[in-house]
Amino acid sequence: MTSDTTASGYPVYALLAPADIPGYLRSRDLLPLLGLPDSDSADGLTVREVSDGNLNRIFLVRRDPDVPGLAVKQALPYVRVHGESWPLTPYRAAAEARAYEHLAAIAPEFTPAFHGYDPGTFTLVLEDVGDLRVLRGATVEGASPGEVGRGIGVFVARLAFATSDFGMPSQDRKRLIAESVNPELCELTEAMILGEPYIEHEHNRNHPAIDPLVKELRADAELRREIGLLRHVFMTKAEALLHGDLHSGSIMVGGPEGNGRIAVIDPEFSFVGPIGFDLGLFWANAFIAAIRADVLGDPALAAEHVAQVGLSWEAFTGEFRRLWPSRVDRIFDDGFLEVFLDGVWRDGLGFAGGEAMRRVIGYAHVPDIDGLPDPEQGRAAARVARLSRALIVRRRDLDTPGDVTALALGDGEPGA
Ligand code: SR1
Ligand code: MG
Image 1 (cartoon, rainbow, N blue to C red):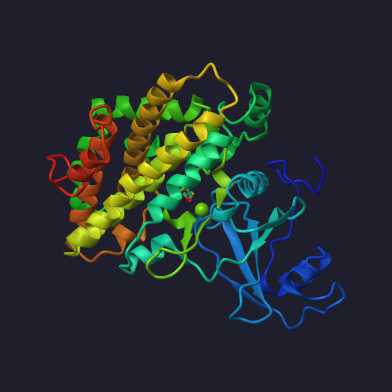
Image 2: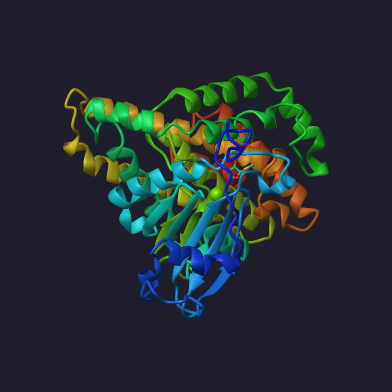
């Protein structure tokens, strides 16, 4: 190890500050993307830090503050929430860059333009999609989700089909699996979503109103067995390249109603895994949004959020079936397809349960619930936890989006 290398093995690198960004873009010859000549001083650029989430610094760089320019995203060498006490190597930026390259080729209409990766500073430069809104933020403000689920269903189907054994020859697929391994972030997901919430762990927290319920859940042998099965599916089922963190904070939508452009961002958790994981994360956050709306006394909005599950499933299966005749391996026949899709549905329900559960009893909570006043916050947390358990342990009996709608909106006993 040299003095230029950290104890974790990655090179020492400087963290960017807003004042560094114009010079940084100049050094990378990226000023022409902003309509400036290479030789420009870049002094006139405005830089705004919009860092969100736990893992990165993000800067928006514009010539005109009202006209989108470029986004500069740098991986931090730690998880932000605990200061620098939770180290994480910045190599996830390389995983994110790889994922963006695939997304740009497979689903460009759902992806911000990708302008390159700098391995020396673990920094990506992307299209600035700052004129869109983060779906979670829009949801918390009470916006309708519109039909965002349709777009997400098509996005997941395109990515999944193209990078599965149906879209790629077998040897190419093996190379994709090897190139896309993302050990550190997979381990984070295994802990955050499919591990820690089910044991006593210092990372966990919950609303005090659900203390007795949380105790019950951690002593629930059926739940523990099923989360173990889902964890193992996550660890071993290399079906297709995933986004890997497809919650509503990773989806940007155009317009307050969400009916315009959809841009999927932050694919740093990308790896080859079970397709139901991407759908499940999206569904979980639709359920959470629905429960939020319901406890705030807006059942019509709650129904719109839950409807995203059916819309995305319909769009996913529709696009997957449309692509099916182009599959590269004809040993897989139409009978196989039905069994395969059924497996994706049930994996998706289980992972939705895991994702929703961790948002109320694990480490990374969401403002959809934690931003609620009391006593609604405690009631919402209890509903999310009960619904999550039902999705995890009853996923084999829940056959249609209608079945889960009934559960989520409180018609079925476990979610009520
Ligand atoms: C410690 S990181 C917590 C969460 O943030 C990311 O967006 C992932 O969802 C991860 O689980
Ligand atoms: Mg993220």
